[in-house]
Image (cartoon, rainbow, N blue to C red):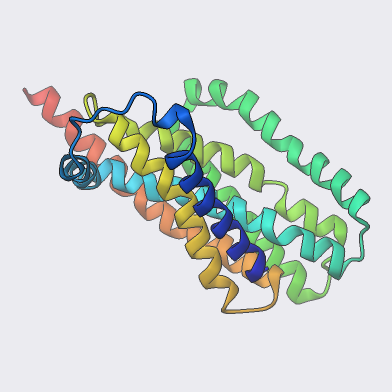
Length: 242
């Protein structure tokens, strides 16, 4: 699993270089008046915004948990349970249908409950998934069915957390959304790659890594969400008093 993660990171790095320097779309209309020092100054201002910083980390947690599943599920299902690549593909497609369902339901849920509540729901789904994996594994009841049942919620949590957190991260900005979008986009796979690389060094048991990570990372996410809500309430109270 560790080798696959390093492969993903190397591939992303070379793709970034290719699109930056070789593709005509990124070079044809360069603005020569832009100075590098101003670009990094904008990035620094963006990162100093507490809502953006917390929301970006929150989205990174959702992305990290999703990438952890996609990078380790093949090892668990094919090596531990002996599934053929064809059967694994069909099962992945079946479980992955949760992405389509969750994206269909998300606008209705946001309208009714709000984005913060949907992020919190996604975080608790992750905790349930992690707890189920650890319980089934420790009790010796981990089967193909119990594994897929335990991770089925990952696709819902990814949609609820990442899409809502990404929208929240852009709300503080009007004139620096380009810089904010650049920092946000680059940080997501970077965070996912860094966390996955670190946890893969701690244990060779993919199920254990998933279970512990799906509990620890959402707990951090709940803390970040509370910080976002506190900052939002402060802004709203400031507007109301004025």
